[in-house]
Length: 227
Image (cartoon, rainbow, N blue to C red; front, side, top):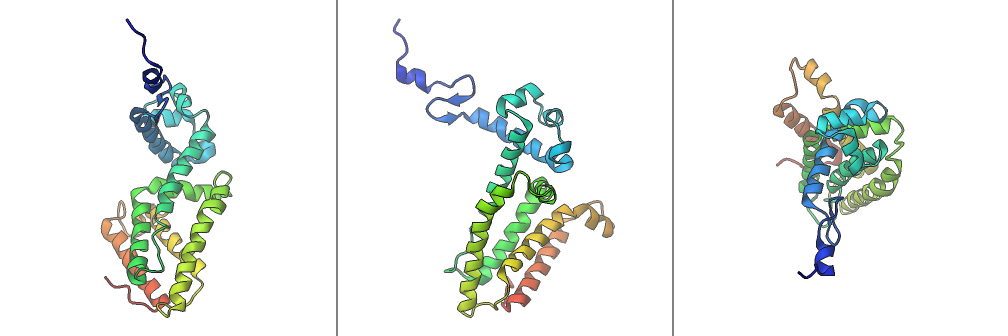
């Protein structure tokens, strides 16, 4: 019987779950994504210091030993969760273009920010906790990844203002306001629901907040943002 060729041996999955030629296998990626989703919820609830690998293991169905197989320590897992949420969050910062219709783009930007916060509420809570703690793990990413995209978006607003399409304001703080309101409705959803006499915020509540924010930004920029 002939032995396997070097090429066929190299293409086989290794015990670690990686294909030696293709990178991580689909099965490994599914497990890692599941771990990240569960860890995101635990870190959002307990913070980095309060969260334990045991709690994350219980939430994900993995033993502490198995978690360490995928991530060598709690900090590595926390960093992976932060990277995942930042990747997703930054996608919604890349849609503004000076060549597009500012009315449509601003509406879609606000809608996308609300959608992200609602679809990944634990990510929003986790990021808020990280910032309140002084950004010990995400500070570099804020400076290196978020700041350049913020500057690019502000430049688009400046271009629109120069073309007379919108009123000129402090566009950096305009962006901060949009972020604060869209994330705040998730971070403070329990308080807001209690004040509304509800068990939780309903879809109509988020839509009302989105509509009001659009109206506020429209009035600030002196532009019609109505659908």
